[in-house]
Each structure stands twice: as C-alpha cells, then as structure tokens.
Image (cartoon, rainbow, N blue to C red):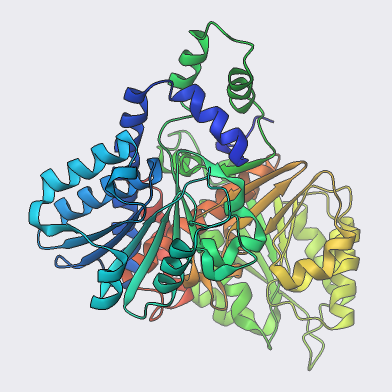
Length: 526
C-alpha cells in the first residue's frame, strides 16, 4: 500500500542538509522564519486554551540565542503581542545584541517596530532581581545545531527558568535548549510544549527525552511540499548529498515519520449518494462483564461515531436490556454467563463465530475480565476468526496474541500491556498501536508518530474509545490496517485536544471526547 500521509522525522545532521536544500538563500530563510513565527504564535494560543487562555495583559519571557531559533522566537513574540494588545515581553539576549546573526537581528528590529515600549531587553541580572510573573516563557536559545557543553551562565539561566514558580507555560522552539545534555537535566530547558518548526528532529521522539520535550507539536512550514521538488528539479548539482536526501524523503524516506492531520480530511468529505449501511462495514465487538460493564459500552459508543454501517456487540446477557435501551443503534447479543464471574464460556464461542461470519472486523477485549476460562474462550475466538482482529485491554495476553499470528491484526496496548505481550508480538503483517505521549503506530519497519492528544486522555476509558474508533474504521476498510489504526489515533487525539481547549484538562468526563469527533473533522488545522 502507499505510504500514509506523513512527513519524515530526521536526525539533526540530515535536517541540516535538508534545510540547506529547501532554503538556498537568505530570502528563503527569512520567509521560512516568518512562517515559523506565525505558526508558533498560533499554536501557543491554541494550547494555552487548555489552561484558560493567554490573557490580553500577559507577560512574556523570551530567551534568545544567536541564530534562527532566536529569530523564530522573536517573530512569534511579535505575533503574540499583536494579538494581545496589552501584553508585554521581556527579552533576554543570552549572548548580547552584538552576537545576533543578521536574520535574528532583523527579527528583533521587527518586534521593536511592532510593539514599541511593550518590549524591553533585560539582562540576566535584572531578570533574577525583579523575579516577575510570566504567563509564557518561550525558549529560542539553541536550535538543533547546538553542540555541548553549555557555558556556565546559560546553564544557570536555564536552571533558574526551570524552577521559576510563576511561569504558567514553557514552550521550546524546535528543540528544548541544551537537549544534547540530558544527563544533566538542570541544564536543559524543560518544556511543556515543543514546537517542531518545519522538520521533526529525532531527539524529540527519543524516549529518554520525553520529560524535557513535554508535548510535541509539528508545525508544517511546507518544506516537503511539491515546491521543494521543483527546487530539486532546478538544482544543477543533482548528485549532491542534500539533493539525494531531498529525493529520498519525498518517497519512502526514513522509517520514523510524523502523521499529518490531513489523514482525516476524507472523513469530513461528502459520502456517495448511492450508498447504504452495508457500504460502510459491519463491526463485531466482544467484551464486557459485570465487574467491568462500562468499558465495552464506551467501545460501542465510539464505534457508533466512527461511521461504521452496522455494529453487533456480544456482551453478558444480563447487560443487554440496559445497553440496548441506551444505544439501540447497535445490535446487542447476549452470551450465557457463568455466575459469579461472567465467564465467556465455550457456549459463547459458537455464538460469536456465528456473528463473525457476517462481520467485516472484530474488536475483542474491552471489559472482558481475565478469568482463565474467559481468556481460553477469547483465544479460541481469535484463532478461528477469518476477519481482521483488534485486540485491546483484557485480550492483550500472550496466548491470545499468539493465536492471532498470521491474521490481519491490530493491537492497542498501553505501556504495561505492551510489556506483557511484546515477546510474542508478530514482527510482520500486524499493526501495533503503542499508546503513550506520543502514541506510535508501528507497521513493519515504519513507526508513525501522532502528536495529538495529551493529559486529558489520562483517565479510564480513553483507550476503550480508541479501540471503538479504530475498530469502526477497520470494519469500513478491512484491508487497510495501517490506515484504520493511524486515522483512529489521530482522530481520537485531535478530538481530545479540542475537548481540552474547550473544557480544560481536569473537570471533564472521558465520554465527552465523543462530542468533539465531528469538530475534529472540520477544524481549520486540517
């Protein structure tokens, strides 16, 4: 199949070569810096909404180095001050105004012309003696070309900013400054958000850097658009290393990639007029128990919002009347229970197989419980299945994963579940959704990262909703496991972002995410 809508994640060395290809002169660099500054400002304003929004009188602290990262931060500051007319900014030029490179100096001049007296350049001493409150600290000290070690004064500045108790949000431009020194975290800017400008660099997704990077956002500046290919076509030295890299990333490219929000665009388009419920697949969900009655219900709710045409849910028979009354759109099928543990008995195996014969995808596991007889029955169901299978929650057991070898398989484990089944995972022909921050969709040799979602998902049931979304999408396109998994992850995460921006991270319920699935398909970010 063709590669999912995605852009490559590059090493810092490859990113340097690539940028040299797409930004051949100062005019191109300046245009890119202006796009970056505007994109950072927009992203900051969006993400601030999760904690009530950036106030019109906000104080901004901007850390500026010598080069392009400092210029990006300054241009973002200009845009933020234009949006918030009563806000002000304190700018720390870490190496002095005389050390600024031409485009960084041009950016500083642009901020001064735009904001006038609302901008002041402060020394490190003034910063520490005043000890002011700031809503935002924007880190533009060092970019991806930083080489350790940090000088003592800059290291002290970063440590001071990291421990400042009156900064509401810390944001890094491209990479947190000092990231090459993670062994001494006090010298690394500790970001709440890292805004990756133009290219995602590999240190951003390295697990050991997670606590320093915070939540990453990809700001696409158009480096991988068709315009870049036209640059390559006009390059006389087509055999240069930079040109070859450009050619490579435009095709298969590196195996680590960032998923694009455009992945969701087809879901927001008109459906064919000549279609009916059979056009959009039939999902079978197996799960539930009296101990965990809510999990399977949330999976079904999310699947119903996925656009699937038909949905059958096999649950303990005692739950059917209540569930059918709540969600009559699904076809509810009760399997016999063995009191008091709601065991998915052997009698249920034949019932599920009968329903599976008419389905196009199977989700099994949410709320199922872990009784030995239940897991044995689930293993038999998976082993006999002739349709794509999504394993979630209680079905993520080594013996059930082994039963799924050779089948069209998606699994959605969190870190603990992955540890349990990783040694039995089939390395080929299956799609793994490794939930976390960020969530990664692993398919063959490719790892697709999603930067959508955040702490609002750190509550029970969010994984059950994800399983239902992916399952419903899989039922609609049962031969495209990559697409179903990646699209479900991005859709779920983007809806979570919209929920958090509207309602905050704390005072929400998991199922409120469902009301943001439709807005996610029509947001201006797509």
